[in-house]
Length: 449
Ligand code: SF4
Image (cartoon, rainbow, N blue to C red; front, side, top):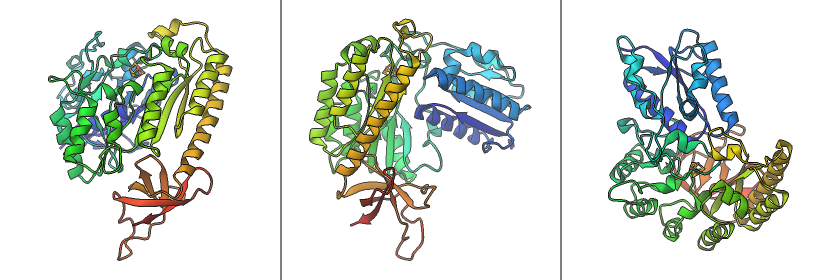
């Protein structure tokens, strides 16, 4: 029996977290056991992120820290930063192995060999038009973490869009989708494990199915899920505006499977900036999409990603973005200052926006995001919301925490079941009304029939 322990540090997005859990599940299946953060471990794996220069720096810092804390451990780095910039990790003394995206499923084979051979791996960079990725870990597919209430399922990887600021297509290669039947089987199996909600996730989830034979689409997948209902609810982690179809919006109406929550990257609300970013839509098209969601689903949660300080973003261009967002019926914003990534076209774009200016614009945009959030919360007052009670309680109050279909978090007093047993509602979908918003940040409500 293998008694070795491992620890995985995962940086960046949900896809990375999902893949880290896939590696962990595989290692556990080979008899390794998971060590907690800060406990001794024989193997340390860092799943790195490259989305911003800060994320890259944090990935290197984490690697050095783990080497210091575990001087005798085997240290493996993988993920997007290791993929795009392996030289940075070759320079770190104590790194034993750099694993490219494609070879992540081989990590247990490497660790269980009698005499580990590094040449099991051939470090490959993605070739243009080819995927560097794989979509699932086969039998080892599992939700993000054992404590999570909502299961993530990665159905797609890679991206073909090459937005000028983004390093991801260079790290993960072209889009690749999990076969349709496999998605259906995974969703059913997650439901069998007790999950009421599955979050479909990917690097560019809206490209789902376009590489499959026969070709299919995200809309068709959700339609089939809607017809067969293998699980109570489905959420899409993030979707590009030009991939939101009318049929998809209709499947988020009450009685259907899709949650009325759309997280959409806007990035900029100025046509000049959008075109330099090589985003495939105009401000007018973006605005039409948001209005069609709002017309069909007036209480849908709509979140936007916005980048501030992209090269050439003038004061006027910033005002255009601000005015557009202010006018749209959206419920929250994720605001990111632009982070130049070497190897992308935008790295060479001028004029650069001074970092102070980008920070000021980001602060103004975040303030606007708070106003949007308050307006959205108010617009839900008095409504009956459908919410999934999370396994983890609110840390501060110890109350139960429900996440609604339109992505509000509501705290609820735990009255237990008919026999007064606490926690019996965890993992259940209930009807909720919120009656208080004590500090503008958390909602407190109660269960209604
Ligand atoms: S759509 Fe654009 S921003 Fe998103 S992963 Fe692809 S290239 Fe990057």
